[in-house]
Amino acid sequence: MSRIGKKEIDIPNNTEVKISKSAINIKGNKGEMSYEIPAEIRVDKKENKLIVTKIDTTKQAQALHGLSRSIINNMTIGVSKGFSKKLIIQGVGYRSQMDGKTLILNLGYSHPIKIKPPTDINIDVENNTNIIISGINKEKVGQIAATIRSTKPPEPYKGKGIRYDNEYVRRKVGKAGK
Picture (cartoon, rainbow, N blue to C red):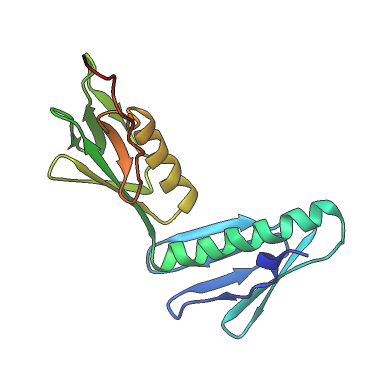
C-alpha cells in the first residue's frame, strides 16, 4: 500500500476545493488548478482535509494512489503559496536579461539564447546572474528551470555554466603540467 497515498492533505484557510465525480478544482489566492481524477481513485473532503483512497486493489490503482495524492497536494500548495526555483549563472561574460516576457541568455555561444516561458510562469532576473522562476504549477516551474539549465550545464573543471541555487558541482583536477 502506498505510504504517500495514505497521508491526508491539509487545505489552507484561503483555499476553495470543489470535487466532482471525475475532477477536482482547487482555487486559491495565487490562481486556480484542476486535475482529472482517475477512475480507480476516489477523493473525499472531511472538514479542512482531503483524503485520497483507491477503489480497486489492482496494480494500476496502486500506482495511481500515491501519484494522485502528490499531484493534488502540489496543487493545494501551488495555489496558496506558489513554487519557485533559483538558477545561478557562473562564468566570465555569462549573463541574462529580460526582454518583455522573454529571457535572453548570453552564454559564450555565437548567438544569444531566447526562452519564452508559458503564460502562467514568471521569470525574474536579479543582477544579470540570478534567475528566479516562479508559478503555481510545480511541474512547469521545474521543467522551465531544467530547460534553462540545459542550455549550458555546469562543467566540472572551472564550474562555468548554469546551476541550481543549492546544487553542488563536483570539481575535477585539470591536466597536470610539466
